[in-house]
Length: 221
Image (cartoon, rainbow, N blue to C red; front, side, top):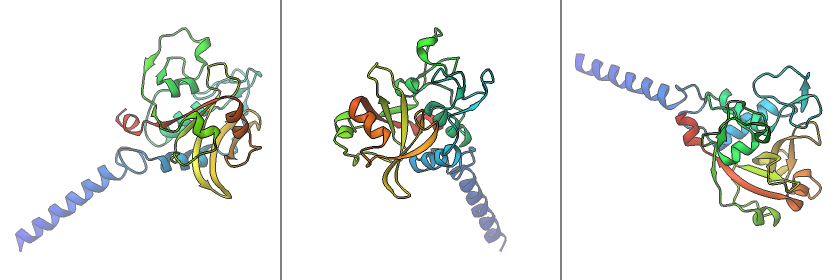
């Protein structure tokens, strides 16, 4: 009888350890490694509809900078990426949109790299993806996975302007993305299948590429 009781207690302890360490004991909501669905859902929940210029100039909390030089403090896609993962329990360093693509950050955080003379430090925010610019310009979304980042350089100046998060099917859209839009002055969801959407126009006239968040590295950090 005593042996059976000890076995039951042991199994209960094992189950509690499994639940704690396998289901969010590290502070994230789904376990040790975040998922694309978790990341994308959190971006939508946290950022959708946030005014693109909503903090007075000179007041710069972590995560915001004057990205379009209009004298107001903005949110941008690097902020959305970093702060979302921080909210999920992963205290990764701040960077820029360019830093998300090139995997570097600096002590000045979200300032644009061209205005930053500090040395860059490596951190793997994202990793290679097989979807090419040719695929995007051909409107072939079949290789995209939820959580992938579509980087856009619409003015072809060799610097990424923004990075939209692919949501997959969302609401009435079969292929949706969420991005901090300077045009709309807020974080919006756009339809990749709509030829008139700003992201489709930017893909057609500029440079674009896709990268996947480095979930393993983010979790390890």
